[in-house]
Image (cartoon, rainbow, N blue to C red; front, side):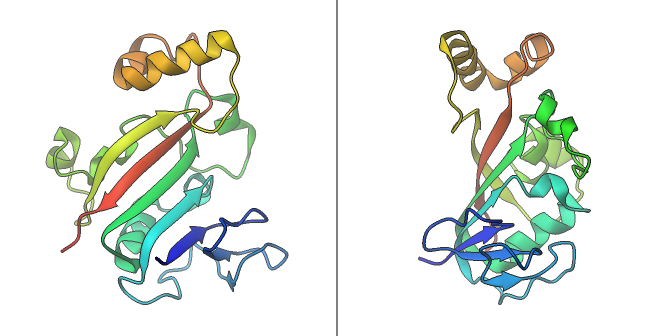
Length: 177
């Protein structure tokens, strides 16, 4: 199984090929992710991990199209981003984009947003969206995370402005033929 760690920094996923702009990182490939195409063949990867990198890129749609190109049909894409209500989304001046629970629904053909707004031809199934998946939470925050993960759009509409969580993890599947 061939895995790509997009924007790996100094914490490259074990066994993955890392790509990053920083020559001081753990990357195997030094490349500016805003420069397309990426230096990989079509349908090369079974899995792609993008841990806190998509929010830094110039064009999310073009980046997702490139992830579709370099990943195999049925490949799994894991994207971790700061939640738009989190202070972590806005504290970093290099963040260019902010994400809600439905931000990647624009690529999911089963979602009304994708049917209504055809921004791209690439398609990914959104398998699941998880709040604060890898963060340690106290008792109260853990209860809130449980509610948010059970009813993500309800949490986002009615509670997130009062009790903001920190990050979202999206699990996507490449639907290309």
